[in-house]
Amino acid sequence: MNLKHIIIGFFASMGIAYAFTTGPYGVFDSFNNYDTFTYYFNQGQVNTVVNQTIACSVVGPGLNLVNAHFLFQANFHLPSRLNDSVVLVAQLSSRVRVGIPSTVTSYFAKAGSSSLTVSNNTLLSLKFSGSVNGSAVSTYPIRDATMQDVRLTGASYTIVSLNGYFEGFIPLGGPGTSGSSRNLLAAIPSRRLIIQRDRLTFSLSAAGKTADVTCAAGARAETFGFTNIADLPAYIGIDTKYSIVTRPGDVGDPPINSTVVASSYKPNCTFSGIGRAQLGISLGGVKSNRPISTMTPGIFGLGQSNFLVTPKLVKLFQTKYPSTNTVSLKLSAFNVSISNATPSIKNLLPAAGYPASAKVGSGGFATFPSAAPSVTYPSATFTPIASSIGKGQLAFLSYDNVAGSVKLFDANSTAIATVAFSCSEGAGNFPSIVPFDIA
Image (cartoon, rainbow, N blue to C red; front, side, top):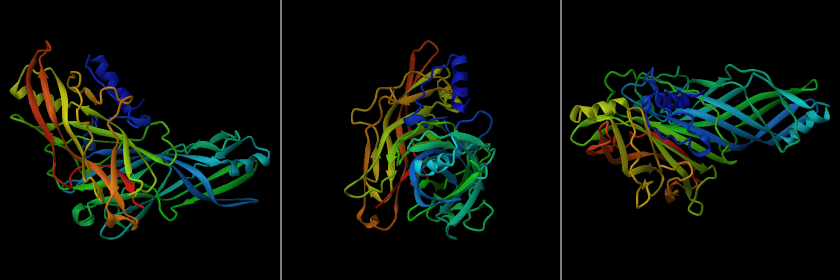
């Protein structure tokens, strides 16, 4: 059972109203930075699910394939934002599935095998770019791995889970560092740490034969995500030296050569006439992995959100309106920003907006659009700027200001007040969502 089901089951047992979209292709496997027993997640977390064809070499007795096309299906949990003033160590976690092509499975079938075994010695190497000291490559051995047998079906691809997790610390200081940094803005002056696949190695065995598979980065490696470096004051009373992510759960399969994401965080929002408190904000969506150009712009589609009404927020309302019991959210703006592309700021809401959410209590969720995932935000389209084309650059999609109002209700569902809010932490301080390759 994942964290989402634990949280929702708790709310149901307490009689609290909630709504929760599972997002495109089930990517919302939890509200990623909400946790009842630790505050490590306040920096923000992005769930990135990549389904991509990659070229691999396969070497075994009587077998030597170059550029064999495998499917690479990876679910990454990455920090979407690290705060310069407090973060010393950051972590990532991933699960990986591979699609073994029939050119490889037929090799074992011809040897008389009806199944094959996937080794538990898999290694995943990731490249981290953005440090003033240059790019760093870290290798993560699979953890908690188990051997598994997979039946050969003759399909174009035999999907195999590399049973276990790849997780560890991110080299924040660049190559040769232990993974920690006491001055992120100095270590990463671009304020973006880019995470790409460098290499994947594993082996397959059957009928007394073993084939070693090596999937190198290639000319342009897959970019799994990026982490924005913020310059914000530390939250009082919260231990933020570590940015620890949750382990990925099982999610659906996005289309081949696409990426689905869910990014969430808890900013300190301003509530007019009352003060500041955390409101949980998340955004999920999908994009093609094809490089974008003026002829083929980037499209962020199937957008949808879960908003978490934190207990601290309800307590803030009760300081001025003690009878506050439930609240209803209405959005006036859900802005995202993108670098190296235009428009630089985009409001994801349609011109007519959306109705206010249903009433939710402390710890409850409000979903926009309310019928998500069946109904989603309009697709957002971005065109790379001329100076970014042909240089192997990326367009970085991040959060920007989110604003609206909150209507307060007492225990009898009588409206008490309506409070305007704005969640803006300043340019450069917002969490990441997803990158686009520029042709």
